Image (tube, rainbow, N blue to C red; front, side, top):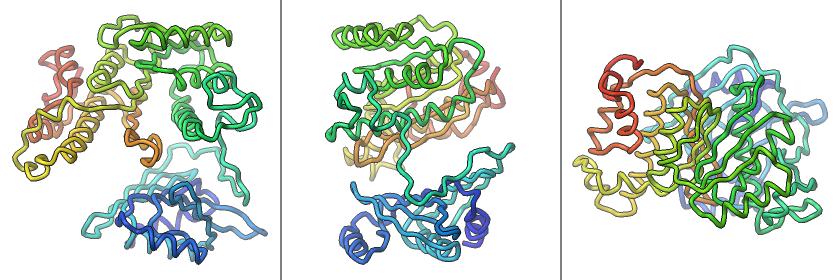
Length: 411
């Protein structure tokens, strides 16, 4: 724990933006959590704990916000107390710790045997952003409560007065969470021309409208957004709404992802809950068009399930539920690896809390243009005896000289 202690000591100050402690080791700790709540303590087995600095009567403190179900518990610590408490959490209760300061990022992982691995990365240019040290900080949403947004009103998320409909609050949080991912990649997008964005499998288009509203109405950017879906009645409804709002550069089309050819120059590809291999086709299109940013929340990853033939994992794969989850994780992990080899910097992130939806993995990829073949991909593919469609599609495009199994760098 010495490396972790050193990183914590250097991070627990005013440069801290946040820490997130997650990956609880015990799953059944309801009684312990209830006791902690009665005593005014932060539950030791909350799904996650977020730590931020705050200033109270000129004293720098660190507030731990613990989320248990729909309740949030807060406790303030001095630096010494916070250091001791966080180390205690990581020694016995949690497996992961993410730290973000204005100067650096760090991650700590604790193995089942208690081994701690710490990775640090200094920021080339320290962020101008400062930590919010106010005590009674209200949750910041990009689309704020109390300010009516036309498409949210029509979609039943807000009232005419801008109040969030209680039954749709999770949807409101989901929309804002997605816009945070978009906000993070804005520096990677061109500012001197119109942005072209494609949303594959847009469905009712909550997020399609949100992206247009955020980029065009709030940020003042020139955008051209196309939403694509197979359901004609949904597309007709969304088209009517876009026309009513005067969103001239937001269009909806009926069509299949695999056969769509209207790309041209594309800056961002969004694919949310595109079922099974539809995600692979969308990602393949994004790579083909050299899209600058990809935001993908996969869904229903069925393709690998019947194909997994790994004998070493046979005791696990014989259980249908575990096989299904293993196949989903392998599919998304291999998709991420393929995108890295195709010239993208990739992150696999939690889209929204697991309690709201199990489809909570978001793949965020930013194009660097540097293809680099990782031999470990083919090792993984051969080990499990299966490969996502995305890998096969790109191998067909690239040919033998640049396929995913080659050594060295692709063209």
